[in-house]
Structure formats: C-alpha cells, structure tokens
Image 1 (cartoon, rainbow, N blue to C red):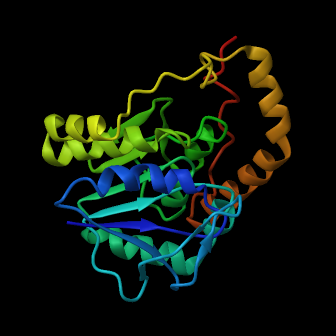
Image 2: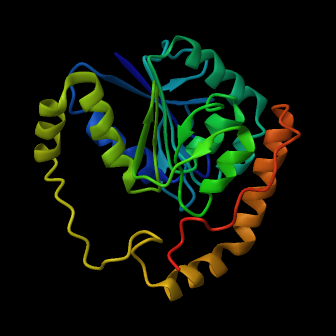
Amino acid sequence: MHVLMLAFPGMTQLDLTGPFEVFVRARELKVHVVAKNREPVTDANGFSILPTATFEDCPQADILFVPGGPGQLALMGDPETLAFLNAQAEGALYVTSVCTGSLILAAAGLLTGYRATCHWTSLQQLAYFGVEPVSERVVVDRNRITGAGVTSGIDFGLTLVAELFGARRAQLIQLSMEYDPKPPFEGGSPQSADPELVGQLRAFLAQFEAERDAAARAAAQLLGRADAVPPPLQPFERA
C-alpha cells in the first residue's frame, strides 16, 4: 500500500515525521514523501526534508496524508497543490491529516460534510468549509482520519495502523517505539492547562491566527462557500 505524505515549505516537520515513524514500521506500507519537486523542503524552523517523489512521478495513494504548519496559509490558495490532492483523493482508501493539514484538505473540498480536528488554536476555522470541528486527539469519520496538533501525529499513525491491520499490530508498533508518554507537566491542551497560560499563548499567537483566519475565509470563498460565517470563539477553552 502506498502512503503519500505531502511535504511543503513552512510545514511543521513533526506533523510529518511522527506518523512517518509509525508507518515505516508496518511492512505492508510503502511511504513516499511527495513535493512539487525533489529539492529539499525546509520546514517552519529550518529543518530540511528530502522528498522521495514529485506530484508527477508518485504512485496513486492508498493513504493520502497532509501535515500542517505556517506554510499551510499559502497552500490553501495554491491551485497546483489543491488539484493534486483532489486527484489523489479520488482513488485513496484514506484521506488524512495532522494539525492544520486538515485546513488544507478542507480548502481542497475534501472534508466538507465530515467531522475533523485540527490544532486547538485554529480548530473552529474548519467550520468555514462545512466541516464539523471536533476537539479530540484523533477523529475518524468514514475514510477521513485527522489528528489534532503536532504531537498527535503518533496517535494518529497508530490509529490508522489499527484501522488497517488491527489493534494488535498497532500495539506492537507502539511498543517498538516505546511510545509511553508521561509529559513532565500537565497542561498540554487548553482543557488541562492553566487558563493564564492559555491566555498568554492566545495573545502571543493572535496576529498569526488572525492571518490564518483570513486565509481560511479566502479559501472557503474560493471553494464557493461564500456563506461561511465566523465560528464561535474559543468553545473548547476551560473557563
């Protein structure tokens, strides 16, 4: 089975490399890191990844995967990438993402009418595209599987392996990776974090999230969803 993992400038590398590490441990999966060309792709923080295939020479995806990251803003309005995702999605068994990769899928019209998740700071932007935002670590809706922010990529990968090959195989891979997270601090989500820290992070990201929101609105309009309305503000934040 062919797994096509999209790589693009400004992505968050862990969105891709987390599930990549899971997928390569399943012998039935052939993983391809796909970009427009074979030049190194630099993520949002300067980490470079070398694609193994291009849009033109990659195989048909059985599993189509899209990571997120700041570069997602430009990609939501990139006709070449959106056309590629649509063409591959037609023959894919699963269409998937981690973090704000779901906004790219949504901009391609591939999540309309589905439940999906995203990084919590941008989750409600999915509503612009006729997607039901869900505040969960991994969301499975028919053949759409989406992971929340960044570190959820491993959880997403294990969930997909379980869908494909059963829970026992996923558990074996989890054990082989020694994936037994015990974070040093409680508070890795807005539900469990100190409300003051949630507020600080929202303030720090406010300008960028405004830009992301504007990009999402513009992409929704290009998709023909001119009726897109602003989503409720911060519905998942602990009071």
